[in-house]
Amino acid sequence: MVANYKEEVAVQEPEFVSGPALVLRSLASDPGRRAIVTADGVAITAGDFAAATYRLAHELIARGATRGTTVTLLTGNTPEALSARYAAGLAGARVVNLYDGMSTPVLAEITASVGTTVLLVDAERFDQAPELLPLIDVPTVLTLGPGPADDTPGAIGEDAVAASAHRPAEPPDVRIGPQDDLTIRHTGGTTGIPKGILSLHGPYRHIFDAPIGSGPTPDEVPTLLAATPLAHLAGIFADLTLHRGGTVVLQRSFEPGAVLAAVERERVTDLWVLPPLLHQLLDHPAVGRTDLSSVRHVLYGGSASSPTRIREALKVFGPTLYGFYGMSEAQMVSMLTPQEHDRIGQGGQVSVGRPAPGVEVAIRDPEGADLPTGEQGEIHLRSGGIMAGYWKRPDLTAAVLHDGWLNTGDVGYFDEDGYLYLADRAKDLIIVVGGHVYPSEVEDLLVTHPGVARCAVFGVRDDQEAEHVHVAVVPTPGQRPTLDGLQAFVTERKGRIFAPEVLHLVDEIPLTPVGKPNKKLLRELAAR
Image (cartoon, rainbow, N blue to C red; front, side):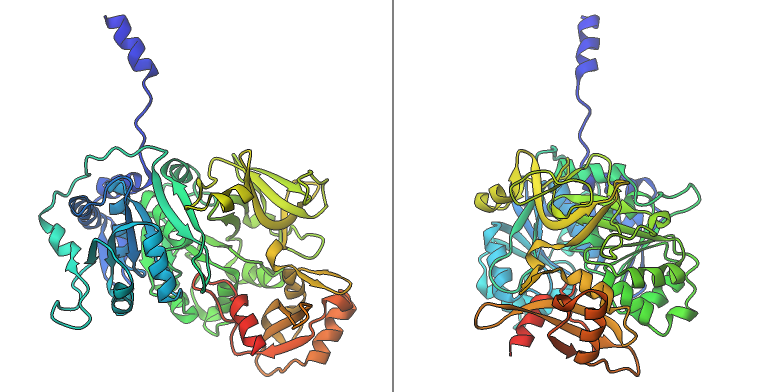
């Protein structure tokens, strides 16, 4: 009997611990530490945050949020939003965020398509709820904190935080497995229902085993500034920071002056930005007088990076830049460390680094054949982090997933040392008479012009379906670039077909809610 017992124990699989559970265990193990600083400067201890989250998880379970159900969040950058996401994960429910910047009818369609059981609304989004609620049929709608009174026109629902006060401040007894649904993340878009990317607990759990950058030393506790939406990548970085014993400093939105002030005031070590937001920091007049000595990791990615601006950032922030290439369908693909930022590709692009451990990347032609080193093609990848599929869209899933490989829709190539470079998104390719124009290559060139501070290149079709190269330009102070001058500049250095045909001088490049240049909006404005 003893021999049999030992044999049984030896083959028993270890307990699976989900990402949300890992974060909460870390918080509960050091209750006195400062875990969250709100946008209003209020500090919340790890113990208080963990207890509130455990109580909320029990409350959600009592309201029907269990495995196989969906908890949908209409939330901003608040502690309650983080707590709600973890609580839903602990309950076993999948989480869906309703992104700020999408139209109310689209949010209503998303809410219905994912089968929402509980909708949670925080104070940052109270004003949007009255417009959304008449369009949806959700069993339970709750607020995260005191909401508008029930007898007012803006009434939303019961306060889930107050209702959970009598619940136990301990983990719920819910067994989560690696194949259970974690979240559905929706792609961008302002018309039509965006694609829902289904992720599972197992793949997400693995990100906690691969610390960002070099990882913290024993005497270096990370402080992350979350100035972009927690509903997107800032939320993932917040998970990692809290798990590593650090502090998350919240801001409602990205305002460069406020970001710089917070970096100095809170001694921020980690900062996540998209390249357009990094450019805003570099152009802000306060950057030169801000104490940036605490910064250890400036994490950037999500859209094309200009080599010129990256060199400026290295001068301002020092050797702290980490370039990331990833996507919701596959998590992290590759990373470029500070010491590797001298890798510049054929078209002047900054490398996105080498594939991360466990990630296979192949460059293929449209027929699926592998291309040799140096040749551009579509980027395909295989890893344990690939999505389970597009929610309720097997047709779209089948179009991009083949034999475990994901066709990313990105265009890139490898150099002889195994560094990956992105040319562009295949769908952003502008087909003009005489060849193909990748917007990022023209953007990288134009920002070296003395009159161009920031720019976005995009294609516009005419009534004959021919595409034309347009550029929106934020001029440098005191400069007013002309179309003739920019055309000559591009033609001399890159060729006639790359030269913009139309120039739009703007005060700022419009951005999507996640901080990428909003080229769809630019196309719509250009068509008017």
